[in-house]
Length: 265
Image 1 (cartoon, rainbow, N blue to C red):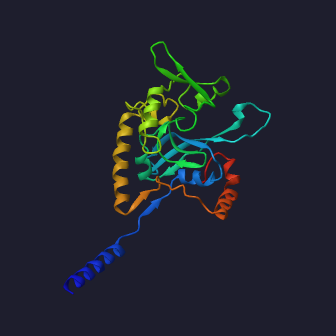
Image 2: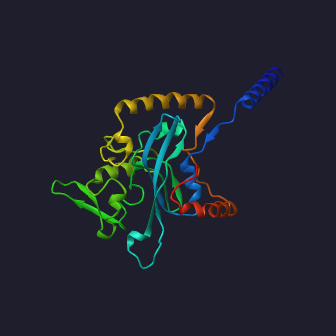
Image 3: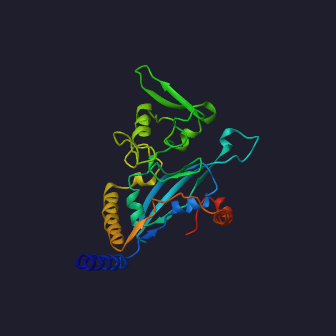
């Protein structure tokens, strides 16, 4: 009887403690909005094209490049099988900015054959590099291999780091073996992401180092403050199947916005 009473009291305390905890509050991001907007699109990639901080408004900002695989003209070139959209500057929370501060120039959201992935990867890794539909591996005299797009898909190089950049097979194979679908990947020696010199088109890289350091300090404090209030990002967005009714609702409501290439503030 004494043991039963003890167990009953412990159960009651655990229940009270659970009830007293605040529910986790997710801060939706522009990436969540993109995922909803293109819920019925089976294949696309989203690259973090730029980032910034506005001192006057105290706002953290992202800009994204969206690469949609959709045929727009049956008689046009293969380049017209893709729709490229560059968003406007989008406000993001301190938590989201902090999570992605290493991801400039990286794919931060992709969908392949209907499967959504929010892992950060070198731009093009998830869908195009290593895909024999778009190119092949070319071996150099020293034995190393790098990715080369077929002539008709050569334009894809400009979507990422440019034609002068090479994706090497050993880096890619390491990613497929150790990181694919499981964790972010910045290259075996951290050669991808914000720190790489290949992000030459991003305004972030033209900022003074003191500015960047101040932003990193500020965002760390702001992010910690939000987390202490129970907030977290929705980077772990679950791509579970939605009902047909919801899919149609999101598809219809977003069709007019998808043509604009930006999102409302």
